[in-house]
Image (cartoon, rainbow, N blue to C red):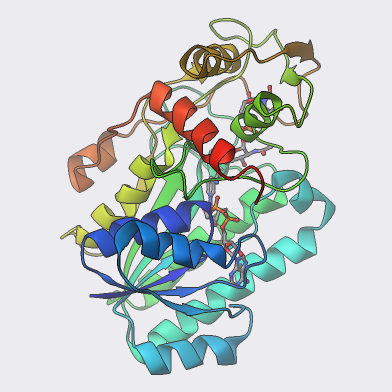
Length: 332
Ligand code: NAD
Ligand code: UD1
């Protein structure tokens, strides 16, 4: 089976490409490298010993999307490409709506034309907004609180309408919780430019002394120790969920949460990072971050039941692998 992976040079996409190649899928990547580097292609080859076909195209350019389908005729598409920074989406909503929606509409239109039927979409737990209870299952109401999250919900709605109009499509929507960690090789991982917004990249930059101290946003949440609780999942468990989605025998429009089902507080994560990496992370409590919620973790029962999804890596692995990647790549 030939799989087109959009955004395949990015953090989650690159790990998924490795899994796909290891399982003997043929892989074509389309990525405009707006948030990733070309070196990822060589690293994927180094890890797997296999070739991928790469197009540096912007998916907002429909003619380019068509060129890929005409040449490659993929059987399935896993659509990771998109802009994902919540804060930036509040500052530049039009950029987010344009990039995330137009790219997806182009892909779906060309898929329809070339009769490619299997589509796996990267959605996010952010579509649930502030949940009324925990754990969050797939039937919970959806109410994103920022333009990034709204693009995800809009795309979910577009996919539902498309499926309604043409039920030969086979669509899987995956709602990710908080991916962290990196490939064990130390070759693939996440290392955002500038000051990170998300917790694990920030902790790592304190560990490498690029930043002096971790600001812990709030210590008066209604949680185990007053700090925010999230469902951190190792990126390699998350990426393998996409292989399982391709193998799923159920057809139709399906939605799955991909998380571990366990909540971890900020302090629990920082303490675990210190312990497994034997390093001190200076931290200070500061005000809550606007828009943050107390706690968010998944029910992954549906993914376990229908996809045989399981998490092989624990919080220790996540902390070790996140730091290992950045130490390996510090001067690149
Ligand atoms: P990433 O930024 O590392 O990867 C996305 C890739 O898409 C990048 O390589 C970028 O260059 C590419 N891209 C963006 N717009 C493009 C376009 N118009 N044409 C071609 N390529 C384009 O992000 P990631 O963390 O790997 O996330 C992958 C997907 O998962 C995104 O859709 C994101 O919204 C979603 N998601 C991520 C998280 C997370 O915490 N990382 C959580 C939930 C959902
Ligand atoms: C982020 C995204 C969300 C996305 C989710 C999964 C934001 C605002 N939201 O949310 O859309 O679906 O990741 O990838 O980016 N924290 C600190 N100090 C820091 C950074 C974070 O204390 O410097 C705390 C936060 O308050 C939160 C926890 O750490 O309690 C996790 O934060 P983060 O990594 O940004 O993830 P989410 O808030 O879940």
